Image 1 (spheres, rainbow, N blue to C red):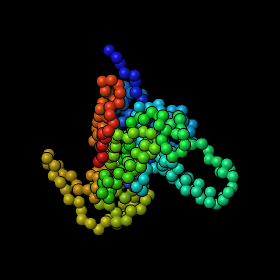
Image 2: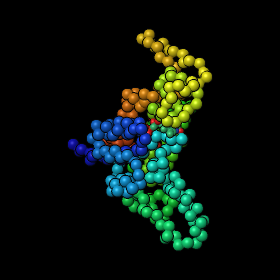
Image 3: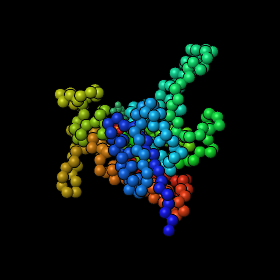
Image 4: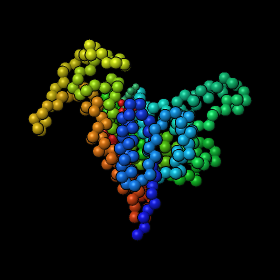
Length: 277
Ligand SMILES: Cc1cc2nc3c(=O)[nH]c(=O)nc-3n(C[C@H](O)[C@H](O)[C@H](O)COP(=O)(O)O)c2cc1C
C-alpha cells in the first residue's frame, strides 16, 4: 500500500469584523480533517508579511486560498497592497514622483523590499516565471450585497483571482457568501431601515424610511417570517450555520476532486468549483 505524502494549503485572508475569518477557519478545519498541513494566515500589514516571509512562499504549497471582504466594491487595502503589482496608491505615487523628480537619481527613491510570493523571480518584470510550480487556487469573499446580491461580489472575486494568477497560481475555485455588515444594509431582517444612513452608533430615534412595513411569510410549520428590505435575507445572521455547511462542503469537494487522485497527481484543472450566494 502506498500512502501519499501530506499536502499543504496556505489560506490567506483579510478581515475587519471577522466574517471572512469565520469562512477561512471553516476551510482550514476541513483541510485539517483531510490530514493536510494548514497555514491559516491573516493579512494585516506589509511589515508583518515581510517578517513572516519564509512561511509565505507559494512554492511550498499545493493549494493557495485568498479571501477578503468587500469594501466600497473592492478588496481591503491590505490585500491590494500585499498582492497587486503596486496598486493602492503606491504605483501612482511612483509615477508622480518620477515626474516630480525629473532625472533625479532613481536610487534615491528606492523602496523597502516588500513581500515576495515566489522564491524565484521571472527573468524580467511583467511576465510569469515558467520554472515556477503552479499550485491550485481559490478566491473567496464575504459581503453585504444589499443592492442586488451576488453580482456585487464578482468584481472582487475576479480581482483576487488576478492577484493569484499573476503569482502563477491556477485559480479553480470561487466562494462568496453574505456577511453581516455595519453599513446601510446592517439591520435585522424585517426592521425598517432609517431614511438616511449615517455611519456610527445607530440612532433608535432616526426617522424610518418612507416605505411600507414588511409583509410576513407563513412557513410550513405555521410560523411567520418577515420580508427583507435588502437582497440577502437575514444578512445580519451571516455567515451562520448554512454558510458554514457550504464552506465545508466546498472545501471537501475541492480536496477530493482535485487532490485525491489514484496516482497522487493533481486532477486536470480545466474545471471550476463555484459557490456564490
Ligand atoms: C465600510 C464598509 C463598506 C462596505 N462596502 C461593501 C460593498 O461595497 N459591497 C458589499 O457587498 N458589501 C460591503 N460591505 C459589507 C462587508 O463586505 C461585509 O460586512 C463583510 O462580511 C465584512 O467582512 P469582515 O467581517 O471579514 O470584515 C461593507 C462594509 C463596510 C463596513
